[in-house]
Amino acid sequence: MSKMATMDDLFLDEISDLYDAENQLTKALPKMAKAASSDGLKRAFEEHLGQTQGHVERLEQIFESLGQKNKSKKCAAMAGLIKEGDELAADTEDTAVRDAGLIAAAQKVEHYEISGYGSARAHAQMLDLPSAVRLLEETLAEEKAADEKLGSLAEMGVNKDAAHIRATPRTRKAG
Image (cartoon, rainbow, N blue to C red; front, side, top):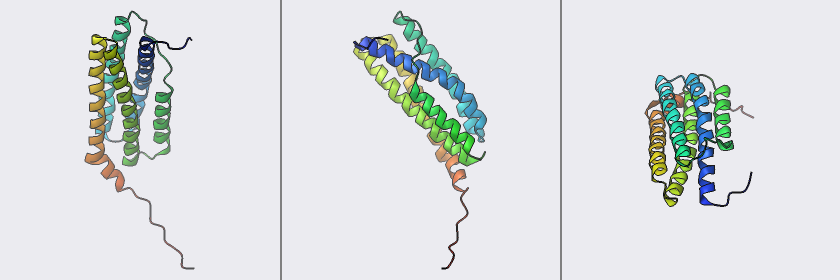
């Protein structure tokens, strides 16, 4: 593959990366919902799956408006974030502690997406692509809202429930 030489190349690279990231998430979110013990967290993951499918469709609209085929560029960052979430779910008992960890993992994903969509939107503005700007802004707003919802779920109960699950204090032996 040739090196990127223009802002158009960079923008296409960014949306290709986001396209792969969103497609990876459509596979990961059902597993996250299944791993959650909180009904509210399960619902949040299920709702975000629907939004994520919409994000994929918006990116496809952007490719079409650019006269490009839908193109994925392997998003190693998303693969790593998903792997961390999978490992956390596997290594944590099915309690509020797992839910607290799943929320933290999901918020890492949201923060990555917020950054990616924010940069892509800024570049679309510079390239005078109003349709892409509008679509990227819609997705960016949904990603920010998902992050806020996860934060609220954590603060309103999951983290409090998890905080009650503590290690037994160790006693010192007199020496």
